[in-house]
Image 1 (tube, helix red, strand yellow):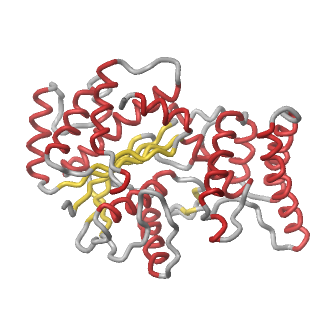
Image 2 (cartoon, helix red, strand yellow):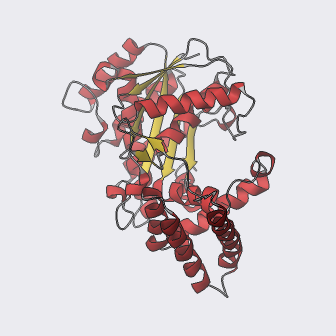
Amino acid sequence: MSKVFFIDESGNTGDLVKAGKDLTFGDQAIFVLVAVGVDDETKLADELSRLRAVHRVQGCELKSKRLTTKPGVAADVARYLSRQGLPVFVEVVDKRFFICATMVNHFVVPPVARDFDGRVKVMRMKNAIAEYLHAQAPAAVLQAYLTACSSPSVSSTRLAFHEMIGWLESRMPGDSNAEFVHRFVRDTLEEFEESTTTGEVNLFLPEPDFSKASNPFWMLPNLSSLTNIYGRINLFRKRKMRGVALVHDEQLQFDHILEAGKKTMEELARSGGAWPVRHADYRIIEGAELRFSSSGQSAGIQAADVIAGFIMRFVQEVSRGDKLPGREFAEAFRVFADFTNPDRGAGLNYVLPTRTANLLNLFWA
């Protein structure tokens, strides 16, 4: 069973409060993180060299950004890993949906108690509200919330509340979903106003992480994606993580945040506070090592990069909905169905609206 997992990403890592005026995310609305379990990296390097020749790829290493018109490379990398019985773990995140889910968890239905928030019905309700906001909320509502995050204050938070409430009320009556969400937001606004009078101000915003220069990062999908992949690998290996290494592509800006997130996850597990998650196991008994390496020195990271880039571009095209990917791209995506085994944590995990997930699943039929 693989003990070294190489990790890389695609989709413009960064704080989602910098989404852009129209929430376009620099035309990279999807984030993907991939971990590839490798037993023999030298053997993998030989295969990547062979694929460079077969597909006529220039350069001394495979880089996803050079393969936008060559979906067969990602498919062939996936087929090789499948033949070798090597696991692949993929997190696919719609950035707008990630923002909506964060809003729900802090701004609409803030945490109550662990035994309540962890109930399946509550989690499904929160997901349904996030789906509604993703599908219906105008950019102004989301931008008001992002502004509150980037410049946290009583006034910016109050403005974000009123922006959302005004939009919901404009859809009432006649929209039962708006009425349902409106009740929660009004209750949270009352709690917010009460906190301002008592002096114990609760801005109902997520806790930020901080850069090495002490600047706040409010929403980092690479952090949540890494911790979930860590939990999925822990499930896959049945908590036998001693001697396991997670080798992530260089992260000069975020390495300390990723390391801190992993450490926090392990400390929560030791204290009995690990959150139950479907298709992952956050109860880390034996911690793995996390280190960072250059893709030029690692065939494993190159394989993860090729897969991440292909899946990011494919999902982004499907989510836009204006046209379906070409046959060659669809056939390449179908190869990844072989890796998906939710009970063992392997394969693709979606943090996407249901509509996009359903469209993607059609390619596996």
